Length: 227
Image (cartoon, rainbow, N blue to C red; front, side, top):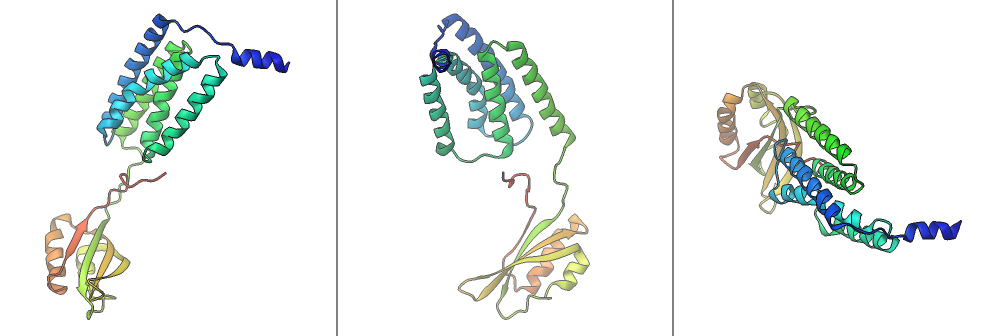
């Protein structure tokens, strides 16, 4: 039984150049569709979009080439494992598209062209649906406010009256010494009552902190996502 298993795993199949071109071409078209979906449903990286186009045909041809060859399969597995350590970590969205492209390439290599096409259309449709409906997007309107004050000011309640006047809520998240300990950098999480009064709010803070640095901006939590 062991000899039969070894024989089955080491039997190679003849790769037809015509079949490889057909399957690879189909995978290339599907990869282009995947790349267009990626480009139109979120933040875009030029190099990553181009990679999504060529990844399905590459996977397809590699799978066709190693079909039934145990030694070649192990070598390809090792090569793919090295890719992870030679590239930067991506977002969950980008990793999902990589698995998507590789799945389409594998399906194309086993002649499951119809299934690959249906999967591409279905998953791309889901991506467009989630994008246009804004599913799970962060609706938080909080802003990060960073204020620099001299060391002789008591930061515990120095801006409380301004926060009551201009914000719905404010929370001191971090205190950091700067300029060799002669100043403090205060980081607040605030939600403004009226966005049009932001300049007036910052001007009053500047009058209070001696016209030192004041930074106010919204944090993009979707961009800072981690796995």
